Image (tube, rainbow, N blue to C red; front, side, top):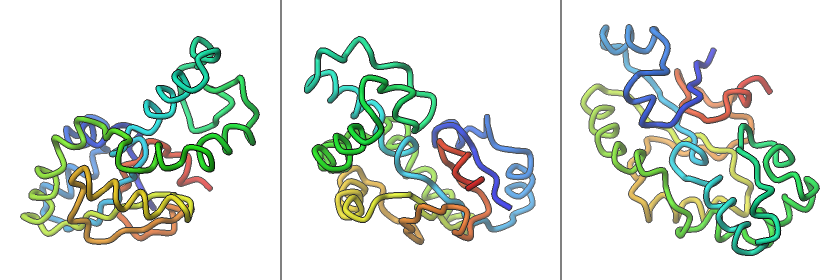
Amino acid sequence: KHNSCPFSMAQALNFGCVRYEILFRIKEGVQMRIGIDCDGVLRDLITCITDTVKVTHPQHADKILEPTSWDWDQWLPFWTNDETEKYIFEDNFLDFFGVECPPIKSAVEDWNKLRAWAIENGHELCLVSAQRPHCVEPTEHWLQRWGFVGFDEIHFEKHKWSIDVDFLIDDSPEKLDE
């Protein structure tokens, strides 16, 4: 059974959203495998997408809604799902998954602290990200560019629940229900 945290890595590191079980495990010195998602946790993909849409399609700038999920039609209602998928994953995927997409600032600030803490306490950090095959290589370059190095394992897997981790820091906990 996985526990998930619907907040950013920085918030999770402050333990504001993590269940009591994590605090207990840390206190008792139990070694953990901690899964960390990329998009929405390390990479600020939504901001990158919305900012780019505002530039490339200014007629839609005022129609972008506040994202509450990865369901495109909930925050990019002016396009069909197919149009959005094409815009993001075909026409502009290097802009969104390549090295120029900004990271979440607090994740960059906290990464080395988290990595040092994990090493010191014998925990493993595993990237668990549902990247599409053609986005894997740009994502690997992105991780290097922004200093997210030193994962014990890297998994690009749509079915995140299939990866053996004790906890998953993810912005989409519903992924665990699939």
